[in-house]
Image (tube, rainbow, N blue to C red):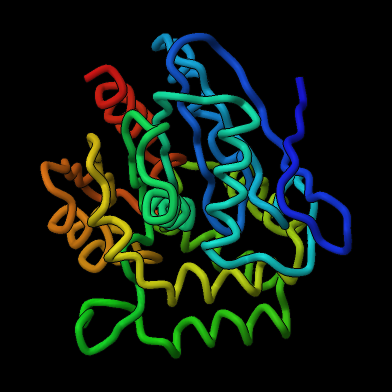
Length: 278
C-alpha cells in the first residue's frame, strides 16, 4: 500500500512525503541517497523483512513520489521531515539506515533531536561526517568538484545523471555484478526528481559539516563503506565517523563501489541484518 505523511508547509500547503511500510517487528527506516528514491532499497527491504523486522522506506522531499517544493533542501529541514515521519508513524526503538546523503540526515537528526526514539544507526556509503576538503579536513573533496556537479546539472541534467549513474556503481569494473537495465532504471528514478532539489542537495551533502552531530551518537552505530567508492571517499566519511563515535563499528567491503547495495547486495544485506540482530 502507498502512504503519505505531511511535514512543513510551502505557500500554506503541507508537503507530503511518500512512504512504504511492510513487515512486523522492530522498525527499520531506510533513508535513500541522492539523486534516487526509496526504490533504491528494493534488494534490502525483503532481506530485512525476512529477518523479522518492520521495514519502512520514504522518498525525500523533491524526489520519488514525494511532493517537490521549491525550497527546504538543507539538512535542518530534511531532519525535521524525518522527525515528522517518525512522529506520524509513532515509531520508537527505530533503527535508521542512511545511505550516502541519507547518512547526513541521520547525523543531523541526532544532532537536533537526540536518540530517544532510536535504537541503532547505520551509515551506509554515507557522506557523514564531512565531505568538503578544508584545512582541518584535508582528505575531503575539493569545493570545485561540487561546483562542477552543479554546472553540469544546469547545462545538461540528464546527461550528467547518466554519467554519474555509471560512476555510482563503477560500471566499467562491475558489469558482471549489475545489468545495464538496473543502471538505466536508476537513471530513470533520478531523472524524475525535481531539478531544483537535485541542484540544491549538492550544497547540503557536499558542504555541511556534521562532525559535531555524529559526536552526539550514544547508541549502537555502524559505518559500512566500499573501499572502491569513487563518489564518496572513505577517509573523511566512514573512517572519520568511526573515529568520532565512541564504540562504533566499521565494515569495509572490499572492491565495493558507492552503490554497493546493487553490486554487493548479499554482503551488504548480511552486514545489515547481523547488526540489526546484534
